[in-house]
Amino acid sequence: MADDQGYSFSSWTSFIEESQIRALLKYKVHYYFAGGKPGIMPTDIFAQIMQDLGAKYKEDPKLALEDFNYGPTGGQPWFRKTLAKRLRDVRSIPIDRETGWENVSITTGSQQALYALLDTLIDPGDVIITPSPAYLGFLVPAVKLGARVISVPTDLDGMIPEYVEKAIHASKVKFGKIPDLVYVVPDSDNPKGTTLPQNRRQALFDMCESHNILLIEDSAYAEIQFKKNPKPIKVLDKENHRVAYLGTTSKEAAVLRVGYSVLPTHVRDQVLKDKGHLDLCTSSLVQRILDEYYRNHIDEAMRKAMPLYKARYEAMAKAMDASFPEGERTHPTGGFFIWWKSAKEDFDSSAFMEEVAIPNEVLYVPGGAFYPIVGHKLTENGTDLEPSKPEHNTMRLGFSYRSPEIISEGVELLGNLLSEKQ
Ligand SMILES: Cc1ncc(COP(=O)(O)O)c(C=O)c1O
Image (cartoon, rainbow, N blue to C red; front, side):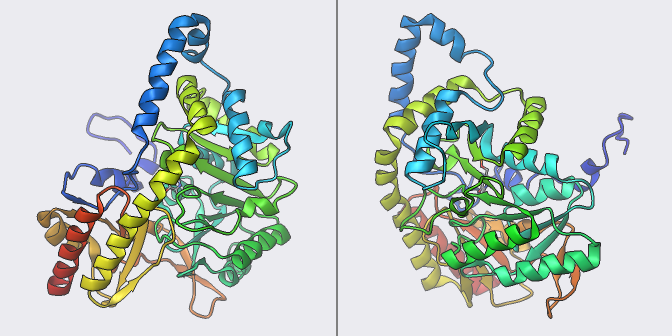
């Protein structure tokens, strides 16, 4: 496609738009319930770490030269060792005490790991199974790279394994192939906020084992939990061959653009090859700052943050229950989001946001953003596939960023507006 300067852009640029969530960042509203921005952050801890580090670098210019330099593509071994210990001791992931750290890779955000996984595993026409709705940061690159996305139904407990089995079967019949990937966010999903119970985790793992499919377990919200969750699916992957486990520092530390992952070895090698071409390496200075945080501060920071996030969730849930018109919301036990679906099928949350919510200083993410722009879903009887359709009568409300008082006020205002004008 040529633009008016005569430059010829690659074909994806004409059908992939700017991320809808990025686009919403331009609105500066009082009642901000849109992006997944952490609102409780141990900035004092990070300020102290940086001050101490500055003094250390003055004393030790050799260390400074190392940390301000290019580092290994897969991340600094000292940071990978720190994360390996946390993944083993706190999240029970089977990582060998001596050598397991070698399986931990560092990326520039977990977004980069998602992109590189897709980039290295997907050829046009390959098939991916995702929940419906799903994290748009996964869906958009998947479609961009030419994947055929099959979205499967979810309920208040997240992705429903029976439909995953049906989707695998339908993919065989319709596309003549087994899907390459299953993607899931088991702990406080984005966008629905649901958490997969243990039996569903086991069922998904078993299904991927029996059909030889790589399972991407995106654990972005694993540490943002108000109650104890079932263990990660990765715990079942004793041989480290079935599950690509992704974590991020963005929600549990600070948005310093660092993700970490435990990938099957042969998958990791391809992903890091791709990363080498994408950004050469992730900043070592940032890894140094985070290393100190993960070694000495994260437990205290999370202990302080959880009741505060929980209070924000409760303020939002209470205001929704009191003021929203007929519909259904999810009941998260962690993470950043509540999902709401209006009982009115023809409600368009995107038009409502432009016309009513934004002029009243309220911002959320219209639910349509979390469905693939082109994709497939199971037919009613579950045996065939049909084009998927976004459900426009839905919205994602983020409770992470504003105080409980502002949330109560803004959500009540939104509820009243919906009741009046929906
Ligand atoms: C489910 C999920 N995965 C991945 C990411 C990307 O996180 P990062 O900041 O590590 O790139 C996000 C960010 O919102 C997310 O919600």
